[in-house]
Image 1 (cartoon, one colour):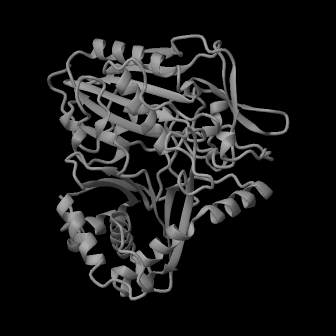
Image 2: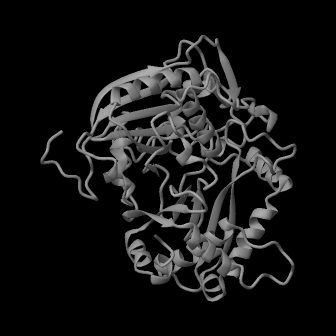
Image 3: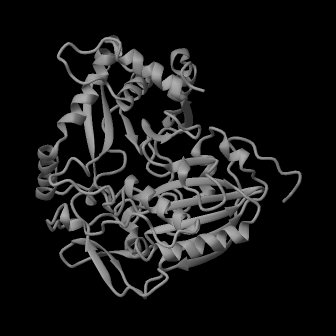
Length: 451
């Protein structure tokens, strides 16, 4: 480590790649295949889903060895992540595994002049991009790339684990199921406690032919290698993590529920309360006109909404985007319960019948969504504070920091995580056009509720 090197917020860190290998399931499994279903296909033109977990520890080589051994073991059950996408002559996509395939890509890297504490600050994700693989890589590229790439970077006093999951094959619930299972194996359990439910056709068994096929590469990419980065074409974004303590969340929720609706509807949930709080303050920061429209989008877990319900261990995408739209003036001039009611109603209306209709609509006329297709002047929420992100302990302690990468970000994208302090605390990773972010940071009412 160069003693004179000092990391400053906003810098693009320099990371040296020291090695690359692949990890396959520890035992032979033969050939396996599962068709992608209607719930998977809308995300084929999204980018790989990126996560970053940062751990303390000074035994880098031992940590890497343990992670690779545990990965081989956990892939015996989660073998789809070691496979590839395949497309038949009709344009039907599936995920395939065979013992001859390369498996999961594991990259080893060095950034010893960066400390764990350096990565704990609320800086923008652009400064973290060299710690996470597959920047700007589309899920459709899983036809010729691994479906999971892991980068293990040696830090001054720890390890940064960057992960890129192909979002066409799994959603957030499945991502953290896999991560928790991998951690269990590394911590000494002989097998995973909850096996993945791998048969996607139990929830949907309609063959969907994608014509024209999804793009093979993001046209914004400068090159076709695995580290290609997306060229910015929109106004520059800024990202920041806003940390809401349990007491701040309680205060926001109490305020939204202070004037309950007279129709006897349920109290607003923690999510609905925080969602409308962010939505109202973001549109204010954007300085929109009262007659402008604004959309709130949430990617909702449908495991318990479909008929029959699917188990929590269903491995794949079982999410759908839920939208609600209103005029900026109505949202900002009415009390917060107005917007909370819109969100609550949209979520409650998205039942098994609505899910079925959405699926049939897609199957009649498949549309390849871009990751920015969330609506005009949107606030779009992904991830969930339900996910046990700070419980992923591989045997050397819980992560110090959990973040998302640069992929699938646009003006108004929000990732919610359970706060590190536990309880009811929530971290909100918000991406906004730079000017709007500056105004949000200066919004005294909004930042008053932030740690």
